[in-house]
Length: 162
Ligand code: FES
Ligand code: FES
Image (cartoon, rainbow, N blue to C red):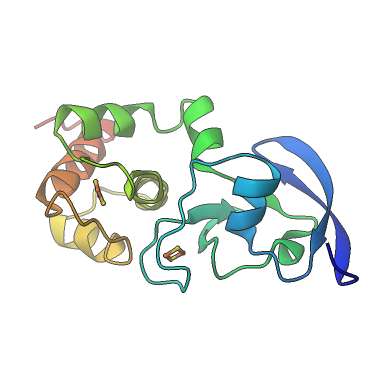
């Protein structure tokens, strides 16, 4: 730790956290290395792949583009929090049923981003799903199964199971 360390307090997955962090530490590194919340992945480290997607104050952000110190006082939610709360249980089940993951590296970020879309009113079209997930890269699945899974959950949540 250098003399640029700062004290921060925030809420992570509903729990109050107070830590001293280096001013240069990214949010995703803080979550993974500082809090051992390793569900958020690190891919490109420059905001392109979406593997590090988390929620800050209800909005999805790239954990690699945000500094931990910028989250002082914020409410941070990770894939662990969404999963433990049961918020995305249907989405997780749909990904499994439709083989929407292979290596799983992109999956936490993909789920957090998909849930961000599904929280909105209305049932998104396949085009809207693709557009919303266009910042989340998957090197394995070819995306078709991911769109299928998200679409099926959108339909189910709206009471329109296909
Ligand atoms: S690791 Fe953050 S967008 Fe790729
Ligand atoms: S499942 Fe491997 S990168 Fe998406």
